[in-house]
Length: 291
Image (tube, rainbow, N blue to C red; front, side, top):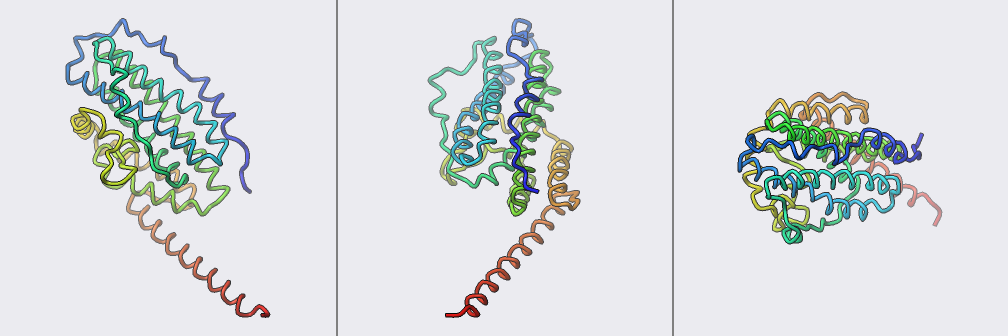
């Protein structure tokens, strides 16, 4: 049965019930003695990376313009992502290091059009990776207010991933053929992540165009810190979480990226054979039909 029920209505109520506010964050209690200059630079790059949601939402509304349900969800996602940018910016104000307005235009990126199916699973995996990052950083940093901020943001990112997952399930129910795209993108996200494979690190407009992350001064050091803080165990947990979703859609259990690759190859061969058979049938019908 094809699913046509809108997801936005329930998502709005569910996320509204657990939404935190900026006023709940005690910026006046920040313990400056527990934050180094290197930490400030890390948070500053992190803050500017959160601003990339501005560029992403333009892409979403363009490439998903036929999907009213998903575009409505963007109103929630964009609001909460911009709040992540704002809360980190407010934290940086304590140190007089918040980004200035004139710094922002050079970071703007116009993403090239892309198939919405692949974009959907890319961001499902990306939100899970962000949740993983923030969860780890809430443990790495010792300053209490920052720890709390990273926990709040991390929980948001995991909830966003769950929403993207629901849209994947809905898309699959409407058209099971999208599964191959889901598998191929997930495989790309899971292999050789180098500690930071995420939509903001992709060169969406070709190899000569810098990614969102590469436009941010200081990103190279930020990248090294990601690599140093995210463990193999973190990546393995992320992989298992993504594989659970894909296994449910495929109705076939995949326990590792290797099994994901094997299943993807088999499915791709099957779809090629089915297309060839369908093409032969059409050609035979043309020959047999009266002229």
